[in-house]
Every structure is written in C-alpha cells, then in structure tokens.
Amino acid sequence: MNAISPPSRSALLSCKHMTGNAAALRFRKASLPLARAFGLRGIARNKGPAAYHTNSSSNRYFHIRRSKVKWNPIRFSSAATNNDNNNDNTTSTNCDKDENNHPNESSLIDIYNSLVQAGQLSYDTHQIRALHELDRLRNECLSYLSDESDATTHHHSSTTPQQPQSTYSRLFSFTPSWANPSTPNQSSDTHTKRPPKGVYLHGGVGCGKTYCMDLFYHSLSSSSSLARHPAKIIQKVHFHKFMLEIHKSMHQAKTIHKLSGNDAFAHILQQTIQRGRIICFDEFQVTDIADALILRRLFTGLFQRGAVMVATSNRPPRDLYLGGLQRDLFLPFIDLLEETLVEVGMWASEMDYRLVGKESGDAAAGGGSGRAHKVYFVEGEGDVNAETEFENLFVALTKGAPIHSVVLDVSGRQVLVPKASEEYNIARFSFYDLCGKAKGAADYLAIGERFNTIFIEDVPRLKFHEVNLVRRWITLIDALYECHVKLVVLAKTSPEEMFEVDLSNQHCDEAFAFDRTRSRMEEMRSEGYLKKKWVGARHK
Image (cartoon, rainbow, N blue to C red; front, side):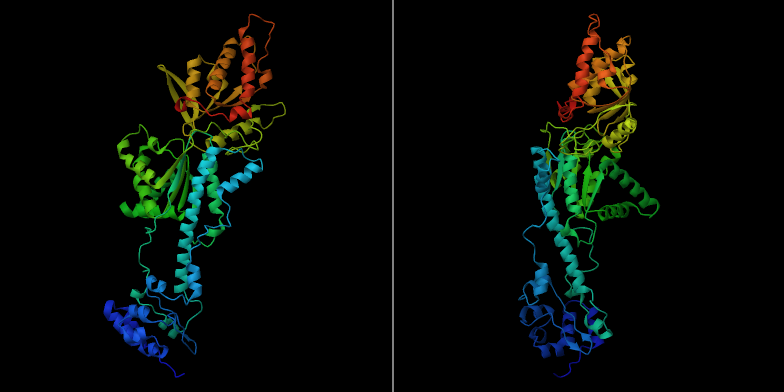
C-alpha cells in the first residue's frame, strides 16, 4: 500500500476556528486523500461531514496505522451513529438499555417479607402500601441514574485517550466543535430528562414511615447497579437539620465566598446536589417563617437540577405550615410538592412501633416483633444503669430535636410543661411537676391530648398519708391511659411496691383505686399497649 500523507497541520487547525459550511468545506479538502484511499465517498463527493454519515456505507470508526500514528474516530452526531449498521458492536452493546429493571437486586417488598419470615418484623399492610410506592421510585431511580452513568462513561471513553499519543496522533484526533454532540461549555445545572416522581409518606406517630424510608435509603446506597456512578447518589437528613445547614450555607456564601443574589443561591444548590441527588427527609414539617419563605425557590432549583425527594411527615402536604404567618406565600410550594411527589397516607394504621422492637435499644423499629421496649426504670435495686437508659431513650425518641418549655392553655389557666419536643410531641416532667402542684383531670387530659409520649422521673414510693399525691397520680394515669399515651417512668420502686394498698381499710378509697392504677401501669408497658395508636385530640 502506498504511503498516504495525512492532512497538513495548518489545514486541520484552520478548521478549529471556523464554523458552518466554510469549516465543512475546509475539512473535506484536508481529508480528501484519506477519503479516496479508503473509499469513503461521502467526504470525497459531498459537501461536508453530514454527507459522510449519510452516504458512506464503510466503517466510520477506522484506524490508519503508519508508524505510531493513529487516526481516531470522529463522531458527528448521535442521530448519525444510530443510523449506522452497528459495525461497532462494543459501542452499541454499552448503549443498550437494560429493560429487565435490575433483576439481580431484591425489591423492598422482598426484603420486608424476608424480615417478617425471620421474625424480625410484624406484617403491616400500611407499610406494604408505602413500600410498593418506594419500590416504584427505587426502580425508576436505578434506571434514571444508570442511564446517566452510562452516558458519562461513554463520553469519557470516546474523548479520553487510552494511551500516550504523539504529536501527529494528537493532531489527527482533533474533532471540530460542530462534530461533537455535547458541547463542553454547556451548563449541566439543569437536566433535560425529567427525574422520577418522589414519595411523601404521612401518617400518625410510630406507624413505620421512617422505617420504610430507611429500607429505601439503604437499598439504593448499597446498590451494585450504581457502583459506577461518578457522584454521590443519595443522602438522608432530618429536615430541621437540613434547613439549619441551608441558612448556614447562605451566610457563608455571602461572607466567605463573597457571593450574592442568584450566585449565592446557585452555590447552595450545587453543594446540596453534590451531597446526593436523591434526598430523604425525616420529619418534614415547616414551623418557621424564614424557612417557609425560601422553600419554593430552594426546591424548584433542586428539582431543576435533577433532585428526587422522599419525605416522612406527621402532616399531609396541604396541612404544612397551617396557621403560619404569610401562609399565602407558602401555598405555591405545596403545589410544587403535589406536582413532584406521590402522596402515601398511613393514617389508617392503628399501630405504634416506636417502643416495640426485637431489642430494647431498637428505637426505630418499623414493624417490631418480639418483646417491647423497657419503659419502666427502677433506680437502685441492681439496675445501676436506670438513669442512663431512661436518658438514652429520651434522646433516641426526640432525635436531637430542640427541647424547651411549653405553656398549655386549659380553660384560661396556664399549665407549664418544663421540657418538650414539639416536633415529636414528647414531654418530660418530674413527678412533682405533675402531682406536687394543684392539678386536675382537665390538666392531665390536655397534656395527654397534646403529647403522644410522656417521660416522668423521680417517681417516689407513696405513703398513706400522702393522699393528695396518690389521688393526682391515679387521675394522671387514667387520663394518659384514655389517650393511649406512651408512658416512660424512672421510679424508686416497681409498680407493685409504689403504693401499699390496705384492702382491709374500707375508708380508704385510694387503696381500691390504686389497685386499678397498678394494673394499668403494668398494661402500659406491655407490647400490646405500646403498639396502640395515640388518640390525642389531633388524631381523634
């Protein structure tokens, strides 16, 4: 074969700074010797690279080896590639879409059923409904992100040299700007492919919303199908903490990075996406006007950048920020949520799994099976860790949420709650906060209707002459029992020994009443009671 002179350096470089028909003509003239030698009539007879793909039946991805010189493939458009006769089998195989939807990975329903069969969970139809929707989202996310990963890998494999190249090789591998379907300078902030619809789980306390979301999160974060993906895929965060980070980032963007306006906001959006495009929010709720006023802009930007949202909440979207200041400005954000998320309500669930799990430390059990949590702690008498366990359970159930005092209005009177997490409706009292002051059934019912879980510490051994304390404790237990409140107690003694009942004393009504109270205290720490749904005023 006669030696073929490659196009001159000046001829090829001149194409780089030209566009349109002029560049096409110059490229045709520079490549004419090679085109004739290899029978590529498209370049020889027609007017540009488009004709090269349309008319030539030869292999477009060819290599000319002369010494160590390599002519690299030039790809002009995705449409032209699709019109080829698939001579490049490797490329077409890599681009094929897996239509079996990742058959080697177990679905969330399969994982859930295996845990039920192993005795680690109790089967719950409401959780199954939630998992069906999360399975749909999981499969769509795997396809959505796998396609993106394949596109990224394909782009790098077609543009990155596989070995060091000589000057001639670098020269010949030049690709005109009009021949590249993806322009490097094109903004990647927005995605043309619409991301999957997220999921918004809402329901009563303890019904397993967070547990279902955790199954989804761990399934995707450990997915082998996404191992090749170049970026972090998924993040999970408490919504309250997320918003604190957003406000902190806005401050840093202005003070440290010297950004303002749209630039500062774009910086925050990019930071958020880099932590994971699929964002799982636990306890999604809005109480602060500063949050309410920026949420629409924030999430519109995230969704435009391909974010997918999963959220758990004690409120449906339409009830978010109910009664808040300037709520009319917040309503477009609710419309956005309803447009981008699929709602799954779990209000019909009659179960509360928070304090029921296989182990006493498993505070996040979704459909717990086995013994109930320990909720009655006795100081001393061999239980040296009673105070620590009591404190740890409070921290586990409040999940680091802000704790502060709350004042309840009861028929014009003020009832102080010294420690409370309004986010999780959990309150904490000492025995004397509740029974050492003048309080009645109305006060205790107001507490039970406001808080689903109540911690009481420093409960003493009661004596016969402390009649007022005994009566208030009896009334308190009756009110909390009526509301199905979860009661966690740190006491000096067990329920059996808390008050010595003398049934022979016919003049002591408290003696007979406390016998019923003791029975209720025992029931309130059983698995059956702890699974009951709270029936406070908000959920009657």
